[in-house]
Every structure is written in structure tokens, then in C-alpha cells.
Image 1 (spheres, each protein chain N blue to C red):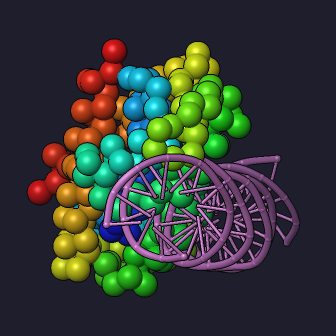
Image 2: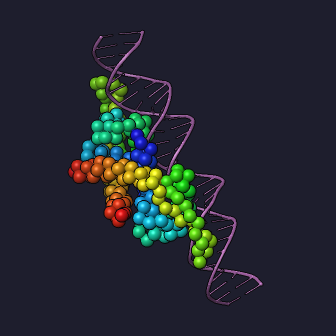
Image 3: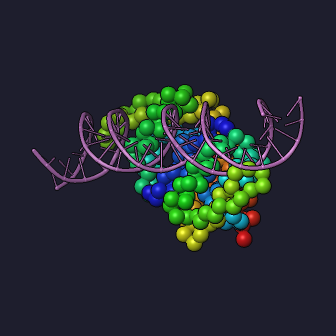
Length: 109
Length: 109
DNA sequence: ATATCTATTTAGTGATGCTATGTACTGGTA
DNA sequence: TACCAGTACATAGCATCACTAAATAGATAT
């Protein structure tokens, strides 16, 4: 992962994961794999797990332990009502930022 | 400043300031004021100054001390060649992120 | 047995923006 | 004179975040 990307992910990776969970419940290993498919080539596994724990502590997600055929039990996270509110606020903040940056980008000579 | 915004600015504020400098040279106090006008209501002055120093140490900007009629001398920063390369890389990284997020946003139910 | 996926956890690190405060120059005003 | 506001820059200490690195553990195949 480039250093720029690492720094840029701060504050957005959380929203990315909440957005993924808003589409459908998922567990850490699965989320990591999906992110890698989508081009976040070197996302650290530990990062994703830590983030999920943080989201749980914030009360944004619900957790359910589900047995796996291929390994240890999975912790399946799903977005709850609080999480949806939080995600909407995330999109608002993100929109503001993108608008400002788009403006800066087109203003340049 | 909202906590979400604070975290989201990590990694992007640097690019924002470089983008401002790419349009025209500017000094810290001026940049802070301009950011506030553009809606970054509570950007901390100290943050901007620290960032400018960092950019200077990275060799992305050139500095010139210019006397002011209204106070201490200004440190006017301008983007140099290295800074422009860095800014272009920033835009590429930013584009990648916005594309991924736009996809996530439209995919949601 | 051991190697390989699958699946989660966590201690320690570096980078970033914020808080809070201090310094310094100029001009206006009581 | 003394004081204050506006301009302009600097910095020590803090919290948060993603990454590094390593460990644990279950399942299956070699």
C-alpha cells in the first residue's frame, strides 16, 4: 500500500466497511478478501479486524457467531440502526470533502 | 470540526494545501483563512503551519520570506517540481478512492 | 507430521490533525 | 503611555488511525 493511500484511508476505511455491511452482513476474513479483489491490494488483515472491533464497541454493528466448514467460527457483523445513521453521516462528510476537492481540482491551471 | 471530518482529513489535507499552492503561491495565515471561507470552518491554524513545515522538509515547496504591512513577515510557499509530481500522485490516489467509494455508494440498497 | 487454507486477535509503531499556548509585529484607542 | 485587536508564525502534548508482525486455532490434504 502506498503511503499516501494509507493516510488517505484513515477515516474512510471505516466508512467503506460500514458501506459493505450495509449491503449485507459479512465477517472479517470475507471483507478483507473482498477489499483485495476491489483493488485495495495490500489491506492489512489486522486492520480490518481491529476496525470491526471498534465498530462493535461504538455500537454500530451487531455480531453473530456462525460455525464455518473450513475453519474457526466466523464473527458475522451486520449494520444496526445506529450504524446506518452513522453511515449516512459518513456519506455527508465524504460528499462535502469530494465537492471541495473536485472544485480545487478543476480550478487549477 | 466533526470527528469524522478530522479523521477524513488525515492524508487529504496535505493534498488540499498542495492543490491550493499549485494555483498560486500563498502563506500560512492566508491558506487558513481561505480554507475557512471554503467551509472547513474549524481548521486549526497550527495544523496548517505544521503541514507547511512538513511539506518544506519533504522538499515539495519553496519558501520566500516577504515583509507584511500588517504584521510579522510572511512565509510564502510555492509548489516546486517535486511538489507537482507529488500532487499528481495525490490526485491519482484520490481518484482511485473516489471511484471505489462511488461504486460502494451506488451499489447499496 | 506438516503444510495450507480459513479465521480471528493483539502489542507496538509511525503518521496525522487537533488543543492549547506562546511569540512577535502593526495600528488604533482610551 | 498602556492596552487591545488583528495579523502571522511556531510548537509541545494528545488521541486516533492504519500498518507491522506475530500468535492462536480449526479443517483438510499431502
